[in-house]
Image 1 (cartoon, each protein chain N blue to C red):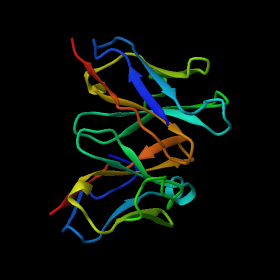
Image 2 (image 1 turned 180 degrees about the vertical axis):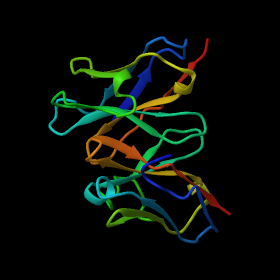
Image 3 (image 1 turned 45 degrees about the vertical axis):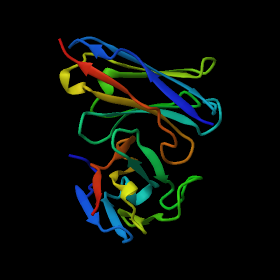
Length: 118
Length: 110
């Protein structure tokens, strides 16, 4: 059974750096072809892909957010960490992590709501 | 505005069939697999279709996917009130080296 859980602060101030952790079980990020991505969803709006890290440490970022994002993995802890710098109120939303075993995002965590406000 | 275009809403009666379209370009849908996601109110998205037309274990065969050129379609037959949700298409864009989602389609079962 695959499970994922996102964790991190629920409230950050503008200009601060957000650090989110995805802790997963039921699959291995050392297996060939496997990746873990981060996706966010502003309240009432559509899904937006942020970043993806692969089993071989390959990384991909949303072109519009690339300068603000860093994704890393710790396979010994089954964790993937996303940092986003210079947070703004428009970054408010629910942040999800999800693995890619097939061509899609196969399983989704429950998400964590992040509010950016002073 | 999303690179992948979906209709904002569709509706149909219980028991009927509905289709949801997703339009892109050669750099994304045209040359990459399409996936579809269902997001029930207040919940996380769930994968319905991957590799254009494959269903994960546990997804009923009422849900189907197809792709032609730079467009993809999600079909749902035997509509149930429990199918009311937002549906998103997704794919990879080879030019952007980025994953993409459509803007989402709200399904109402009348």
